[in-house]
Amino acid sequence: MEGLFSIKSDVFSFGVLLLETLSSKKNTGFYNTDSLNLLGHVWELWNNDRALDLMDPILENEASFPMLIRYINVALLCVQEIAADRPTMSEVVSMLTNEHIVLPSPKQPAFSYVRSLQNPIPPKGRPEVCSVNNVTVSLIEAR
Image 1: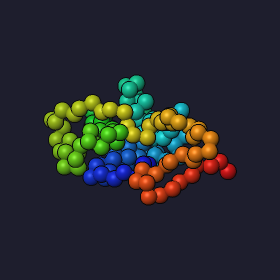
Image 2: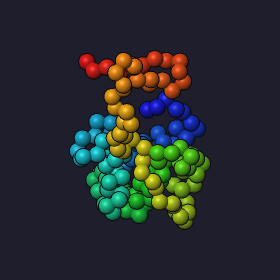
Image 3: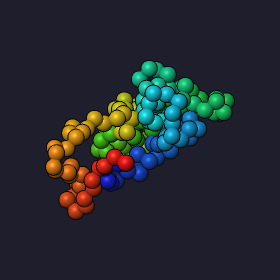
Image 4: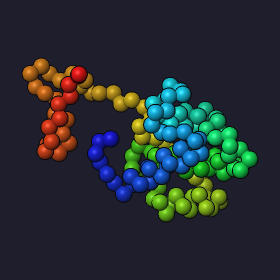
């Protein structure tokens, strides 16, 4: 969203894909709750000890509940806000294949809430600087 890429970007994408697969819902365009997207919805369920509500009913006979909780935990670890907090893909594979590894508790996922703007209205006469690298110029104007 901010144009920053890291080696953990693929880990984030994998976490989103895993949550989409488990729920059979898309991350974007998710409007069934007050959450912004699927990540926010999953985080809300996780915090309320209702993570099993995420599961697509078609998976009910095929997945064991402890493994489903494990998959959700791993997915939430993959989509944490700070890239350094996310596991590497080799760690993800280990967490998914070795059920004896104790998983850490995830932190709030990225993009699961609306960020507040520090200066929502730029001072009059000066356009707001929106460039991270001072190479591009972006002006935010209402239609």
